[in-house]
Image (tube, rainbow, N blue to C red):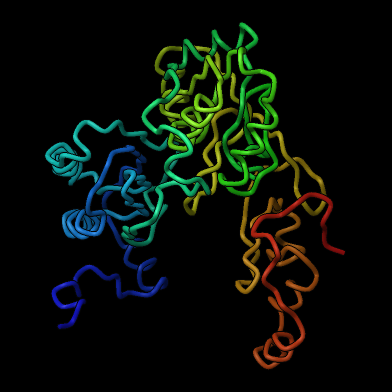
Length: 345
């Protein structure tokens, strides 16, 4: 029996150029949102297929992970299908009343297609299920409570990766130099060693990483663990709505084509090539490299969007020369993300 029989409509068959052209021709707006929920899902594959069929009907786009521990979604929805989408969410036993985080800055073109993938975890943590109680989480603080806690001298910890905190963070936050969440958890535990009795504040983009971290820290004896309700995305909405002070400096990194949305007008980072003030993340224009780094407009022009001389030579080479260069260089970087003190020329 063919295991794919009946599932041909669950596959995206268009290439990137076709998808981009189709998106550019749209004459309606899209609402970009994210949400997550930790909840026991007995059959993630079945839920994946169900959601793909339903959300494809609404012409939704995005990247969604489903696992036995829950669901984590970053996606957009055509404005004219929004009410139907919300109704669909609220008739699903796993998703009913799940809180949405609506994007601050977006042109509605942050995703090219709908991808719903089954994963072992919705956030890879490198931990076994018996290493902590995922239901025993920290207290959620709204923007007012968060600001007050910061003013009282609580320890603030950024639970995002180093390239995220490089362009934006809360004042005086601890920012682990980790590249993945799995690397970060043990780092944070070590950084907070001896502070188990102190008040700890955790924040991340939308809250999904903090939820798990708060349970992890409580399992390791931390008594007063708190997390920012709705993450940085909802913090911006709350302070704007309530006219409160913004304690976040810079830009919030996001995992779609935008690579960031501005929370404050401050620019706290620098171009990785000339050190000019800049917080624009780009991927190296050499697709074989694709390294994520910060590049100003001037360096982008000079270096043709490349991260190094080697990659720039490849970008400007003729097709014949590219074949020769492919045999000489391995363009794939050891790390996916740029580290300081590496520059062109």
